[in-house]
Structures are given as structure tokens and as C-alpha cells.
Length: 198
Image: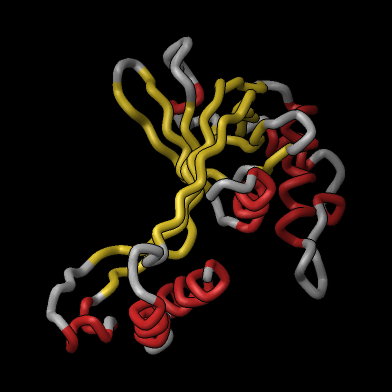
């Protein structure tokens, strides 16, 4: 992916990220919903206070947030080239964005409460009857916010990758799309991504 705006749109449309950090000499990963803040060029989210990942992060080592898009195994049987020459092998197609930057912890109830409100508004916005943090009794969200810590990945560097059979002929790409459309929901999502990438 080369268009910065497309990469940022991909992040905003993706589900949670795999957040990878170096803690006490070992790699640690958690699945975390993150919001992209385009103005500050950062990602924001939270971890459970009980999750040790926010503690003792190696100083000077950047965090990595992995946003995965659709992916699927690609069978050589999808390709017309298989019948023509037999010179085909299986592969895997995918879309992914890697976001790297400095991890900053926000152990502040007010910051975390604002973040929880933003996350809720983002993920409830498409529902017919969206739930709101205001639906809870007074003080409830602030008390729950004490069980989590905010995180921010600052000064982002973004790298997007798409492997969507760009190296194959138009006929093989069409055959792959047709083959994937007969598969699982994830395979059909990949077929849609391949069609959009043409």
C-alpha cells in the first residue's frame, strides 16, 4: 500500500490490533481495540490493569500494532494456468498494516474515561439503538476506568502490505476471485479486496 490516506482508512476500518511490545526481555502481545488519532499521528486504546504488558516496557524499543485485513490460502486449482502449463504453486493472499511508534502509558482515570467514551461512540455508532456510557449510573464508568490503563502509540510510522495475486495474469486473478467467492466469509472478503485492488 502506498497511499497514506488509504492506509489510515484501512486502520479505521479494521478490527482490533495485535499490540506487540518488548517487556523484560520477552515479546508480549495483546489484542487491543485502538483508535487512530490522525491529528496527533497516534493510536490510543487501553489495557486491563492486570495485564502486565503496560508495565516495564523496554525503554527506547518501539511498540508494533498489527492490523490484519482479510487473508486466505490460494489454491493453484483457481488458476487457468494450472490447466495450460501446470507451472503453479499455492500461496497466501492478505492485507495488513503495521504501525510502529513509542508506547506511552496514561494511568489517569480522566484520560481513560474520555478514551472509553470515544471507543464506545466509535463502535456503537452503527447500531440502531447505540449504547452510551451515559446509560450507566453516575460514577460507574469512572470506577470501572480504575481497572484499566490508557495506552498511546505516538509518532506513528505506517507500512501497509497487500499481496493480492498482483504477480498473476488477469485470468488467474479472475479465477482466484471466483474460487474465493465459493468459500468462507473471510475468503469472500478477500475476493472483494482483490476486486477493489484491480
